[in-house]
Image 1 (cartoon, rainbow, N blue to C red):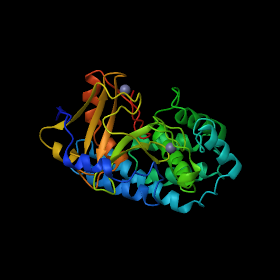
Image 2 (image 1 turned 120 degrees about the vertical axis):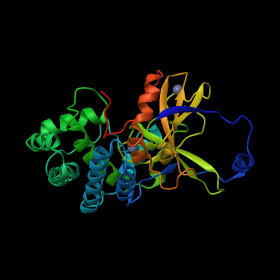
Image 3 (image 1 turned 60 degrees about the horizontal axis):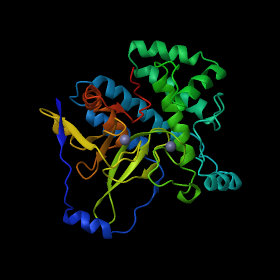
Length: 316
Ligand SMILES: [Zn+2]
Ligand SMILES: [Zn+2]
């Protein structure tokens, strides 16, 4: 497959004019209970006949375990009202991934989620991954917390073999905590480039079908899966509206990935995917991102750096 550039329409369509009169979209969407079940089903379907099918199937099974882990954990408590107010008034993320709580003991939600993920994953993981799981099981709480902190801060130095398992458990814990919030608890910066709930990078962005039937764009958190409203045809990392272009996969077999485009920005040379439910109502921002790594390689060759952060996939 190759990538093709898609022209941006310069004249507003009838739908876009109607969209301007539509009610304001929600600024924040918190993760639903069936997040991981939907994601696993989507990735299982994308894995069929895919050149990377074995890897994608493994990821889909890991996500199915995340679904069971989330259901098995006790729901998180509502945040402390004074802390929520302080974060909101200072524009700080309430579930700060950089410096917030992380209990890596066997009793914390993260530790419990990881234990279940490792237990189940060793039954379906390929042999090299089973070795990683065995080593990871032997890691003490301090060493585990250190690895997890580096992943959360997006700092180098963590073990990339451990990363998808630790990343999966971190996603379960943060999604669980985000589910205890209400949209009003969170300060949502207009056009923010990081998640207003936890401060993490987006994995990709999604175009949803809004109330007026028009497309509404959200950036999707790679950690807690919260979605925050962002403008279309505008770079999420640097907010530039100049030098924006779109590419999609082209050629034989590309039709399955018709929901996915990548938005490139010539101002900051970054690239973030755009997953459109208008083009495919079954698309899912994390699963469709993983299944289109080919598109990342093509824009990387063209000199753009991937801005999305997928905790199952770490570029070397
Ligand atoms: Zn988040
Ligand atoms: Zn930019």
